[in-house]
Length: 110
Image (cartoon, rainbow, N blue to C red; front, top):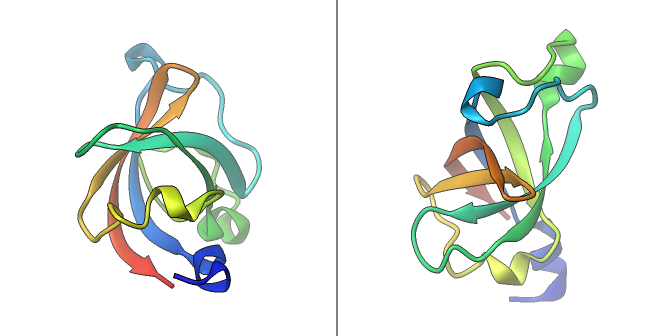
């Protein structure tokens, strides 16, 4: 895969945010972009860096976390995920060692 194509690798995802009582975020994200780490539920559970972009947040002013949300997920090192990234794969969004959201890939974009 070429470097140009890797830079464009992204996925549309659905996220279910954990409540603060479940170990999730205590405060809402106040920007349309959110950087974190994640790992796939299947495989070696290697962490990779992501940026989640919430187009609906820009349009509606909705604060995150809400129970379920949709986003575009971009990868800072796409080469770490190309072999595993596929539709319907589950993943977990983390902040440090705690999981703050569970996600599902709806489609892969390139």
